Image (cartoon, rainbow, N blue to C red; front, side, top):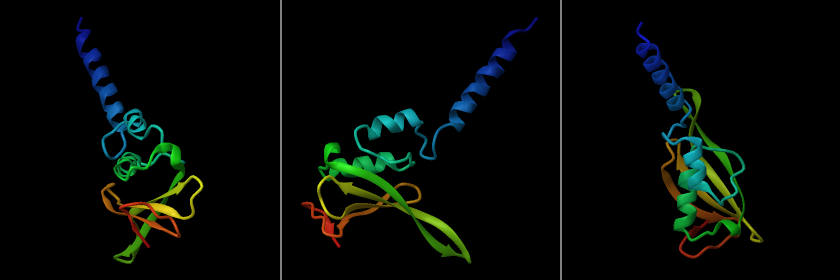
Length: 126
């Protein structure tokens, strides 16, 4: 009897299932959670890791962030409304306004800025 082939097929199916459970950036949810640990994301988004990196680069500590939420950017392309990116809106503890991380659909940062009265050193304000 050949018991090796079903075991190999089962292992391959398990690997395929694990790959399908990864998000679009190739990170699993567990890996993404490790990258974003400490920041209060409201819901999982495939760009959480990039937003965390931008916050760290700007010197924003997790304890100074009240909440982070996403707003989809949409644009009409060939007469269809399509998603073209995200704004990650970061509300700071005890501060007016927002820190915004403007992202492409593929989670590349276009720009980081503040608005509505928030001022942070080294970051443009609109």
